[in-house]
Image (cartoon, rainbow, N blue to C red; front, top):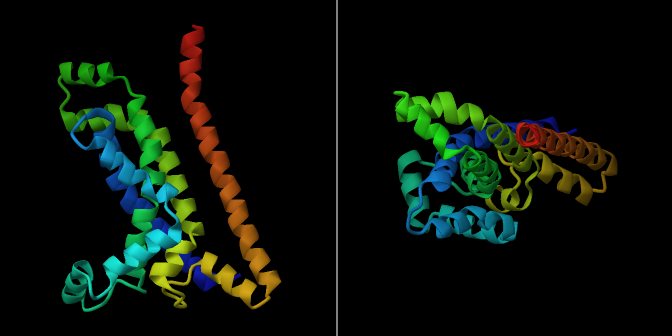
Length: 227
């Protein structure tokens, strides 16, 4: 097991999950309840990483992060470092690539909340922030959990975008998926098999948790219909 690569993968997955959840909750709530011009375009952009080949997305992100781009120059002027082939750039790329895995479960969760509950909360004297914290977020918690688990697992196993944007720098951008590729290229089947088995087990646990949470979320509705 490449423990250094494992540590980098965990740091990347944890940071991506925390940052994306904060943004995805706001975006999913906006898409669920507030119609606005260009909404379909925003939804399409959010879902784009699901259908776009990772190498294509990685290429465009690499172009944006390069010193020749406005974003790359501004970041280098502000920090003194580049975005390409650094952990910071890898994190930004991961935020883009994992966005739909955070937004989609949250969007379904917020859409499932009846609007009359929010209106009843407002009529009861709760403000919008109080309604969000005390009504909306508790009801949407299965979506929050699913989004967190899916985002973490997807980031942990990502390969294409990571390789394109971060490269293969030990201790900084070499993740577990990149290490598996390296071990396979070096014909170290034992190490590659061990790390692949670890990711496989984690992916299986992740999918099981998501299905269990989704089943639990639907159970009260089924009981209500039977009653």
